Amino acid sequence: MENIEKEILAAVSLDEPWGLVESFSTFKREHPTDVNRGMDEVVSRLRKHGVEVKVHEPSLYLSLPGQARVEADGKTFRAKPPAYSADARNGLKGQLVYVGARHNAMITDMFEQKIETTQELADRVRGKIVISEGFASPGLVSQFEEIGAIGVIGINPGVDIHWGICTTIWGTPDLDDLPRKPKIPAVAVNKPDGEALADIADRGGSVTIFTEMEEGWYTSKLPEVFIPGTEEPEKYVLLHGHLDSWDVGVGDNATGDATLLEIARVLWQNRDKLKRSVRICWWPGHSTGRYAGSTWFSDTFALNLEQNAVAQVNCDSPGCRWATEFINLSVMTETEGFLAQVIRDVTGKSIECERPHRAGDYSFNNIGISSYLMLSSTMTNALREEKGYYTVGGCGGNIAWHTENDTLEIADKEVLLRDIKVYLLAVLRNANAEILPFDWRATAREFAETVADYQAKAGSRFDLSLSKKAVEELSTALEGFYARVKSGQIEPKAANQVIQDLARILVPINFTRVNRFRHDPALTIPPLPSIAAAADLDRFDETTLGFAKTQLVRGQNRLVSALRQACRHIELVAS
Image (cartoon, rainbow, N blue to C red; front, side, top):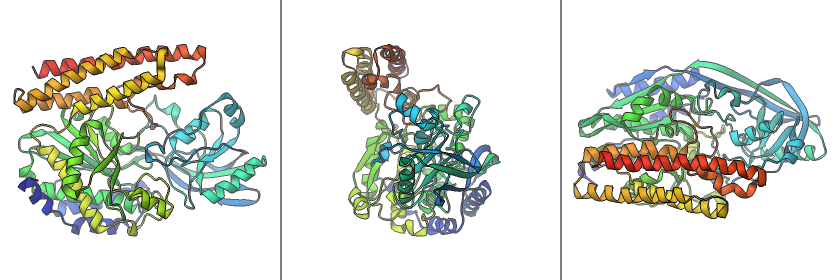
């Protein structure tokens, strides 16, 4: 580790970040009024240290859950409504139908749709209230609404009930998104109550769902710190995390807000040592607007992000108790080697990575920005099993996630100090690298594996040889490009332009279905989604298979065109 990095890491203190964590542990940050109070405190603490802060005030469309309950057989069952549930304060009564589902054991697929939709299932649930295992997530709720359910009850996997959000719309809806806005009420219940309700369903019983919801446009504060670099001030690393939380939300995400605060303080004091700039933002509307704050920022500054952002780094749930390992890290493949070295240098630990899921504040995929981290450290799988914990989406694996139990005890000072240094070094090293530290050869290898997997599953029913050839050509072009960069034949500025521009081409083709400058739904997106249907051809009958093949022809055209564009770009810019 270079002396400048050691010096900057040594400047990290827990004084300000722990003070923020303690303060945030005393008030809820769900309603925009309370979120703005938290934003004001962040701004005040930053300005106290001379850090310049710009405060945006976007108008965001949010859904604020209130009280909820389920009534059946003369009993009242405790419940929580997810954001964007339909309001049913006067009660929605209907026959209850139980549809069994798996509760995912891995964070990689905890937000997926879990039921295979069939005509038989649609006939069973149409006009009825469905109860099924899982969080009241977009995948669960949208799937049953699409086939005619009038309400959904999600059975959470433990004794606690977790808040969440059930819309598939990413951020504030536009006119094209509005038809996907949920039109039915949904609630979550705990496992014991869910089992009792499932028994009622088995007897052909009915239930009444009550949900109190507030929905509309709210002015939300969004602080931004821009720390200018000395050599390429227009280029920047975007570091960000959400400030709104469920209840007091210490592990999700007061610790993340504190991490951003301390990194902003340290880098501002050492801005003369930055080559590129660092842009740091605290988001509103994460929990109640399906990432509305980061989506607003992505929309508003899209063209600047396209031109100048070299990477985006999400900070969610660092510094939680028992979080000793760096596993299940959201990492785009081109960034994995870089991040692995950063974490090894700070902690001495190795990492285990996964494809970023369609969650968190990854609101920049359609623009095409290389990305790493969402959640950071977490507890070991062995400890989770020992404690009887199930998979959750934050808090270092603590099942206090998205509950009123996410209090000060979830945070850990030593873990927070370590995680601040991980994020700080990742951003600092990214900003100061002579050559952007992202390896597109690794991504090309990922593409080759994906195409081979899809081809094996498609068999003779569809030919992906065009995709295979295009990936091979890209791999060859990349090998030559990086060899010339290493030998000095390509100057750093030109090399960095290629590395950045490749993200604009290859990230969207790997993570999005819709056009750039729009936002895909908050549902799982498979690798190379334009040809992903090749993996599912077994599902289709003879008639529908023809439609799937038509989709694959169009999807392969999109993929091959993008890969050829990447090759041309390497040749043109790096020649």
